[in-house]
Image 1 (cartoon, rainbow, N blue to C red):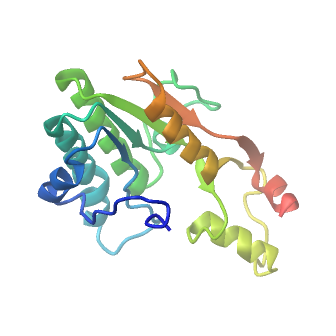
Image 2: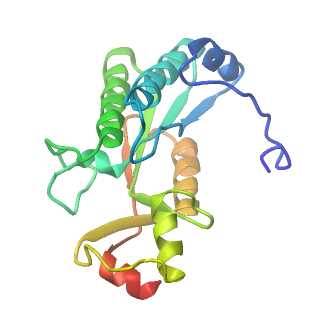
Length: 203
């Protein structure tokens, strides 16, 4: 699909800095979306390699390549146990619920440190839970299973769940890239806040 839309495809690996530098040749902007987003991996190294080392490689490569803007897609989950609802000015909480979120937060700290100390031209987007058609991840599977009557019981029906459609996140990324004079800004990207009970009713 990307080729059909006219994109030039370069296959690289965020854990291989040489491939990142090659992929950035001649580019003006970078959007960094790569992450290890799963609930469980047999080795915790997979989270560290992509979410921490991979992020550091991308950010350092952007500096070395003279990129004029990097939009890094993080997650609103890094705010952890901060008092919700959150805004961009809310201090992050002291606890984060999973290895995925903890390693994403460490990647955040690396990116912001490079912004402060080496003038990395950084903008960070913090989406809430991203949903969309044919989503193979946990949220998509939950919705499909519930709609098809494969959920034996409702759980956590009073727990709130902030979510946003994938197309809105894509628009936010492009908007952040195209907006002038916004280096150093943060954008929480979310649409609605419902309990799982309300979501179940909608399904």
